[in-house]
Image (cartoon, rainbow, N blue to C red; front, side):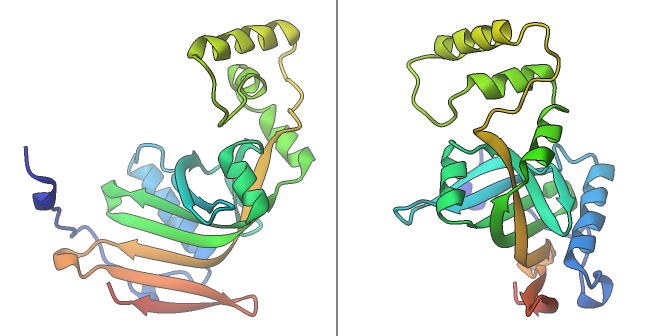
Length: 213
């Protein structure tokens, strides 16, 4: 087993240049996302969502992207979860996608706002019924004494909604859409001289630059 300090990987699969990227970073993201799907990346829509609490401390967790619409990144959650509360208090956040099979990373910074309730309910009812029941049953991010509490709540909700295939969306559940103001595309390169192309939104227009690795 290697010591952590000796774990290294040489990146050499591809390159990235300003001349080769789409001038719209959302279109470029779609290109890379489709590449990740073709490469059979495990859960290519998984990303680390970073938020900041009222105490100024950062927090991160992996969630799943559920759409890129109207140039915004969309995911769903329980509004009473830690991330939900933190985004309500401070909507500034960051998203980090990492696709090691392609030696690529995408970093997004932006502002979160709630997805409208009609859209959220439509997505909620498209989920497997077990996931719908789970959303009703789980008091997300709160302390519970044991898993049996969760299993009992699932049974209760199962009985409550017996025979109903599409459950109503809980009030505490919904989506956030992230309006990006910065998107960086990172391509691994040999000797740690990675390619970094960043887009900044200035006066509602995208400016593109190369960053030193």
